[in-house]
Image 1: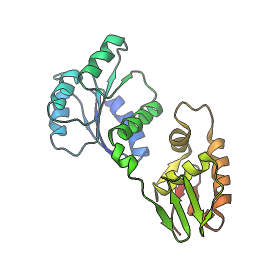
Image 2 (image 1 turned 120 degrees about the vertical axis):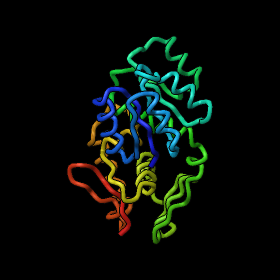
Image 3 (image 1 turned 180 degrees about the vertical axis):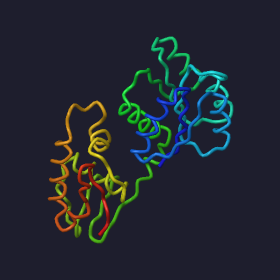
Image 4 (image 1 turned 45 degrees about the horizontal axis):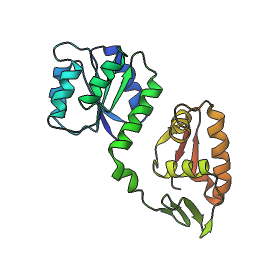
Length: 224
């Protein structure tokens, strides 16, 4: 998974963000101000920077400007100021997104995923054919087959299957699946996920046990 640099002078905010990132499987590092952020960033290996604007020593805008002198890594700015001028200023300096405090951690994670996807289009385009015994999933042709017989899946069932096979061995919460498949602005609940997983398992037939229930959490795709 991607590695994210979390920069905020409030330890409480950093801890909340790190909790959600860890839950989603992201790696991360942290910094308490812009100066620390630049020092940590120099070590390299980051896929995204999540940075507060108002910080001591070196503010987020200055740190963004310095990062942009040497890197195009995606940067999401966090700020308590929501005026349009501030947002446009951040975008002009090269920010990829702008989140106003107080924010929903769920929405923040969804925005991180969206920015990472936009920043790596070649990764999205490089989806490969997935095979396991007689099960074949082809994202490019939007079809799945068992023993060369096409599975009759709804679009959401197919998207679920693709997401499961691309996250093999990872415990996926119902909330994560709702965000990834239906979108973070979807007004539904976990029963939507459970219903679609039940239908997908039915269509998988002899391979239904590839999708395992993790009680009280969600699901995990594991090859038997």
